[in-house]
Image 1 (tube, rainbow, N blue to C red):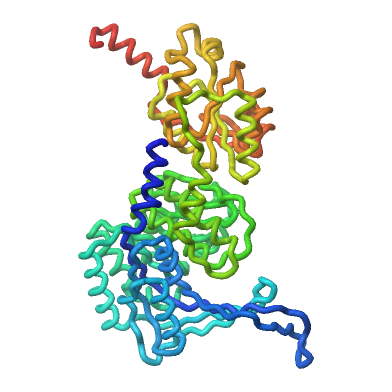
Image 2: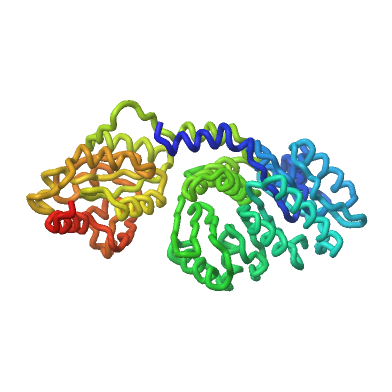
Length: 495
């Protein structure tokens, strides 16, 4: 098993239960009334819902905490509740979920935020909200600050600020938390609300959905890759965040760093029943992965996997660690014996099997002679566009025709082996033609990636893929440059 897979297995099986995550935000109770609608009321033109079941679960920031708890993390929750019936119900639910709620502040006379949904035949008919939007008092903020200091001293792997615009993050609360976290080098993830995000300055990750991104940007942002990246970069210029992670519904997740790096993680194909709480699930899975020291790409995969589970459920649903373990095990191919590049027929069969499971297959091609940093960065970006990355590798004969009689430096079997060892590459197929057109006609990937300054309409084989993506090569890195440097050093007697 490759090192990356072993590391993620270790994360899921051993590291997750050791993580300590604090969640601060607007907590609430989500209540569901399930029933059947078979007739219209004689009293008014409204449907009659014959009630079968009443269910209550943790909602809002508490749903983030519940997701973390079901991932078996140790979770510490802070927020505001009332001393009312819903407040007591909330505390009971917290105990059942094994969440430590010692950061909760109970206020006499305050209405605990509660959302009551009535469903008929799995369709939501109406929602009733019970809430009172008020900020923390100065004394309550002081209690929160003392609580957080104690948790940081005891050790935290991450903090989530879950803002539902119900009052908790009014005044200086977000600033207070982020400042304390940065001082202790604890990563902070924020689920934002509203159009003024200055209170989140200093956060490591801010995770808006498309509606929230539009609110923050001040205009309607289309759910298109280039438009999302442009809006994210504009927000980076306005605010001080390390990363903006945009959840884009069926388009997956796009993460844009302050320095302009972009990761795209397409959503897994999945029948969607209910998106309630899906953003909370993404936040929980991602901060757990980051807290567990996984890479950005692995954390995005983890968050997308968790989201694919929760949207298939009805109502607010916390993802269990066992579900992620099962899903991860089905994603991983078996690795037995020395790597051998696939034939075109074998690769075609594999691509069809992946596509039938709803996995996005990305294809790119090249000689990849003397593998270097530029190659790796290019392939990592290509891999981030889908679930599987396959490489069409020019054979030795093909390379000689394209590059000259002295190339390739590295034989085709060795180049294939080196490429397959990269964590971002799933498989390699060698082709002998000058272009991959014949190979693409057989493989028919979802995304065809080309490096350089090409235009999509000029890319050979574009008609055999659903779309074409152009990725610019990293400047200053090339096989030709390396060969020339080696020749120069040899001539100078330095090698």
